[in-house]
Image (cartoon, rainbow, N blue to C red; front, side):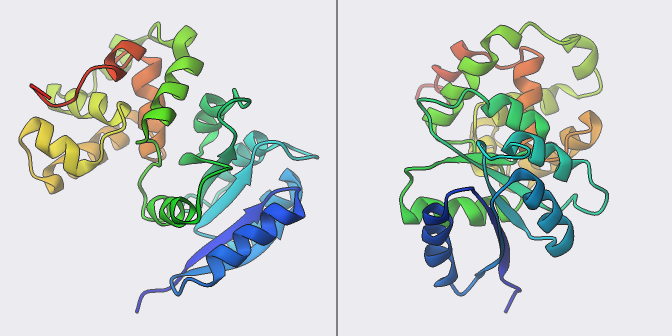
Length: 232
């Protein structure tokens, strides 16, 4: 039996932390290893406990969730720690900044128990929680002013044509299975192309590939309205 997913809860609201702890600890494959009420505490506990996943609220005192995420992402030895941002769709406009800081995705605070458990497992497995349409559109809105390429042509020049195609589909929120189906590749081959793109572009994880796809203009809001599969 594999080791349980180790989770750190970072939220300044006791009821939120207690609710998440109750939901997570009844699962055989998940273990809550700590709680933090400020961003500074979250960073300190991440360094001490080295969890697999940090459930990170954006709005916290003494260093917000974005700042704490950035601290964790640049701390030596914490490269395997994944941050899942907790947000509210209608009010938070910091999602893009959180992804740039190193978050692996985000979860709406009003999500149900099944969605929370799914999110923790997906992020712990190295994937980015960016597939739901609401997520992709929010990222698109936040990045609308930034999609004029940041030296996009030069930045993407290191990729093969196939890797560019794969990056574009990652940016649209597709999984490896969906990318494989869209490009007539096996999921394993799609995963390999994703890994190569991450290495060449210096991306920490899949979520940062999404950021790069938007930054370079490879994916825009218009793309998100188009079906990824021909004829769909």
